[in-house]
Amino acid sequence: ARLQQSGQVVISTESRVPPLLRDEWQDLAKRYGVRSLAWIPILGQETDCFYSLNLMQVTHARHWRPDDVALLRGIADQLALALRNAQLFDAMQRAAVELRANNAELEAFFYTVSHDLQAPVVSLRGFASLLQSQYESQLDDRGQMYVSRIAANVEFLGRLLQDLLELSRVG
Image 1 (cartoon, rainbow, N blue to C red):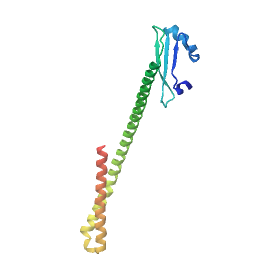
Image 2 (tube, helix red, strand yellow):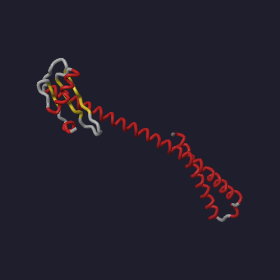
Image 3 (cartoon, helix red, strand yellow):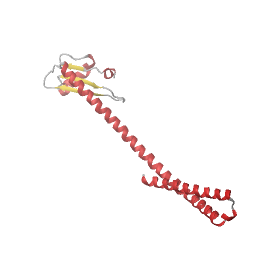
Image 4 (tube, rainbow, N blue to C red):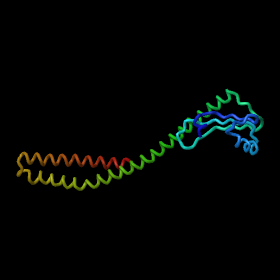
């Protein structure tokens, strides 16, 4: 893990096996016929697991030149970017699913609230209309102004509830 975090590239050939690969080298050589190996850590990950780019030469012992290592390091850096993009895409997909669920819940709430408040608004509208039509002559100017304000506010509330209902249907 420390080697992974350091970003150190490990090169191994039959004639030069680094101490940290001695145990695995015998198995790789016997099982797969590996004659040389380049291990390049893929850096920049924020997860518990780590990735590496491994190249094994089985036909002959390869001498890895500095420009080979630089090319492999560049490829590993591109892989790190691709992995990060995949992680970001996955996080975005999870957030989108959660947002859709929250929106559906909010739409259901708007629908319920707008429907539940329609009945009291209809009653208020009816009573205000009744006061205006049957008792207008018995009300002084101030009383008529109050009834007019009640009727105007009931209409405004009715429009708000209709807008909420439409919003819940739009989704």
